[in-house]
Length: 252
Image (cartoon, rainbow, N blue to C red; front, side):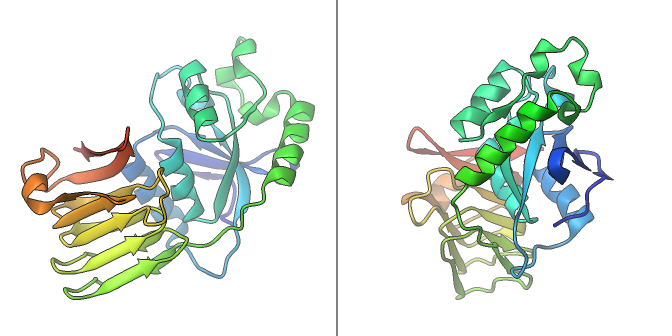
């Protein structure tokens, strides 16, 4: 597992109850988190197993920030961390976590100075019991993402079955990348990218420069003529499904 007691601009990783890592968010910007995780841990290795962790929202619970939990948990998996629960957070953030299937540990809102304390320091017995229950109920087999370090050239077609795909370089026009999970492109995306090929509705596509020929999630697609007119063109972007429709969000 990644070493505990690590601090970056967007997160802190520290040991908690039962030596369970607590991943404390200080920034919800997914591309910033992606860069910080890569800087701290490097690329993911397929032969490593996942380590359970708790997402700690104490530091941002008063900020009102929205958190894309499906994308965040997928990102953590790329670095051998399996989020099994959430601690801290405000009412809206907790609701978002529950919708993503993450149970809530304890209740930091009942402690007047909870934001000033490590969330995992409060109610240790309750947290321990909840963690044990969640771990016992976790039956999902963790599969490491497919990691592609070289550029994906025109004419190439790559498929990540039952897992995410991480491209550490560019995807050229005429290339096609497909994943049953989410896709992360740490470079320009100029070809075709299709995520959620096995109907994973929470799948996302992330890229450093959004200039694709076609994008698709769960069979829903947009072509280059439509995409070239989008405000996200040429920018960092995330693509996801909402209400059965493809949504594109740019990050400045």
